[in-house]
Length: 626
Image (cartoon, rainbow, N blue to C red; front, side, top):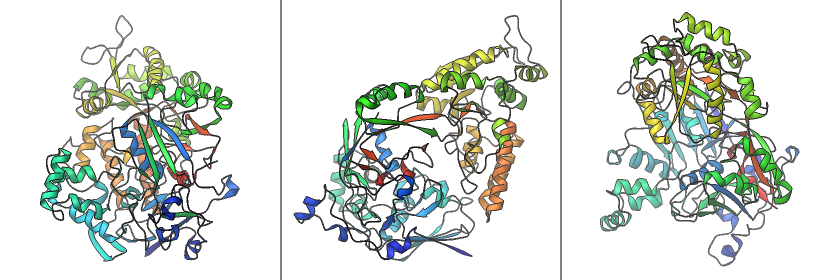
């Protein structure tokens, strides 16, 4: 049975409203004939975004600039996150809908047919057509010269990629022999799967299409090894570092890096309008000012940012509130969307045999969790406003059950000590228990040192675990080194946040709770083994983890929602009972600072990278400045 998905408010698209006046930034260009009128820049059937005034949002006026603060050039990618133009996208209820696409057809997660909008153009005015998909597939993703290391996992089913077809100039199709439930979510992700690119621009950097002499000159100019490296550098759409690269996002970068100030200007050919026919985004410019992360809270409090969530923490809330009236902004508290604000990860693939044996004994992991006074941590660090619980999905998720959040999350020193006694871990004269090989139970927890909250939590856990006869020590290292040490099994335990998506539905992949990724801190070798189809890493030799893989494969091949739900429930149950990661508190709060001149930012929201994209699902292109 085919499932047809079409745009919301399709009746409004069929008979689009009259076009409003030009945006202030573009009006002079249109007047001078340097840019076509708005009606000619829009697709024939633009996506109509209905501003629902019953929710407190209002139809806005166009113009103005949003100033915000970031800590490094790499943060430019957040404009791809915030802008959130995707082939298909999520709304704030995490319901999927066509966005860039006019419509799509999904036949049992095997056959996906995409219909493009007639007249849709890139930001430079070049047509957006099926050729952009063909180029990405044939000349980038499957071109052997590009040496990409194979297709993305979201394009593979049992190691096999799809059959790609161009049906006509505005229609493409991807077909797999078996279901691929990862495909659409990957397209809607905060960091999206790239299956199209600006072919008209990028062909000048591809050996197959470019003039050899011009291409060689460009390779020399950019000081790269060859044309493939040049192509990759010029095509980095997610990183937003190439101002010449056409985009479909609401704003496009106008500043060459490196810089301390980046200006993003509205895309003249953006595909969305509001219900009055005014082309979005409302705001003409977004300006990113680069500052040290440590001083971003202070600069925000002094009124230097119109919209700020990044690099703020709950600890900054009181200070930021004090500056509200003086600097004409409002501080709102959003819920952090991660499964746990802080979680501890015993490395079940540790190379140290003694620690690996301990971590693979579920009694040890349960004892560590039972030995944490989460109530004290909540009161001291979060003013009692967080939710104490295990590392699982959040209460707002339809998959949440009370028993998942409470599993081994109560503070019970007697029960924890009894489990350790049962394991034969005797205390020495100094009160510290001894490992079976005679070493003192001195557990080093490693971190990146980037979060003061993590450091504060570890300080309190240190005191708690001393009552268990466990001495907690901490070690910090730069993020890349931290990751490599974990992956190599050199780290016994690490501290990080919980799963990125704390509020999934059964249609989201449960991969974060299953050994599927080399960067998962509790089982990196097993994650490598799964992601490499057994060519690297270590074969899973722990029965509960093997069961998780079996359930994940059932979810992947399920053809209906009931089977996906059943697989999810069992996966969450196993994680709760096995305590593969030790959650501390969930549903913590983060301050969001909003200029009083900026409208349509929701009073309440969920702050997370994936799938919410911070401001992404709340339609930042419909925020407007007074």
